[in-house]
Length: 342
Image 1 (cartoon, rainbow, N blue to C red):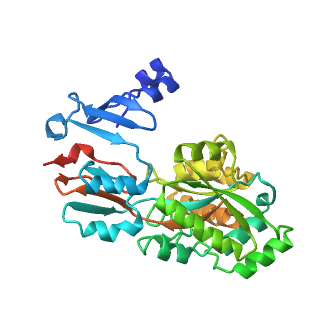
Image 2 (tube, rainbow, N blue to C red):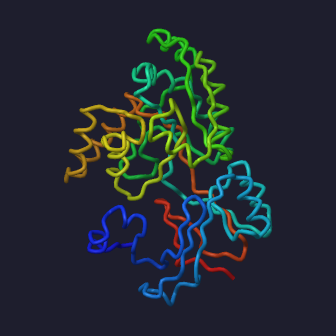
Image 3 (spheres, rainbow, N blue to C red):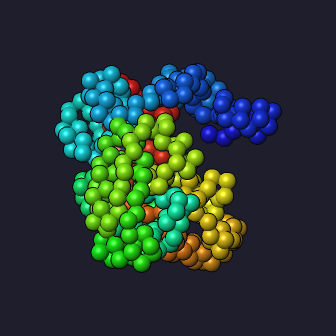
């Protein structure tokens, strides 16, 4: 929702982030970090009379199995991020509804460029060759995903469908690693414990990379800890995802390729030519020229292997049959003002 610039300046950015004041259908009553957020209906919302829910309680339940069991038992009205392996079975449950909504989500393998051999582009390219994305889509997403070839998701503005997609070739990867002086590469892989998809991908990647001679140590940690480790650079590789907040590609491009403050989404990737093009594309007014700039950026990112693109996938949420209007748009926004509990 629209926020008040005056309120943000008066409170200060950090204080405002702790207690944001917006203009949406709900306001924050309670926020316990890592546990829950309690929302109550905002009587001052411009369409308050059309809002059915009196409030919403968001609970943080990282473990997929626990989350699904609770919604099946009726302890939760809805749950997010249904494991791909559970979609078919939950769809057969007469008490539930599974929503598969179009998204801008892309899952990718983060690579810490500041760690030894990972700073060499040839090594990162070898890792890309060593990963079988088709196998991930088939085995992990049960066919609900789509192999990714760019950091800009399919269907999004300026997505380049002809961007390079390196084929799965573990022998070529092995030869490239040897030529780059990284024949005995050992990597620490940070994995979100309790996340079924993350854990499945980790095991699959460990097996695939082994065929290229890469030894991968899986380090399972609580999701609340993994983010801090990525920010601190305490990892070699780790699977993460991104969902666009706006339709324009500048936001993601800036954070992923041209943003020093966040270390280009924790990868520590840096390319001055790319950074300059990111800044130029942001302000280019000619749509054709701007589109070509983003095509160039997608090609440059792929050449540098800022990270390894894995797959695109839909939002996967489940709700009880008595819940209507619980859905997300491609940018991830929930329309709780439209949600009804019968």
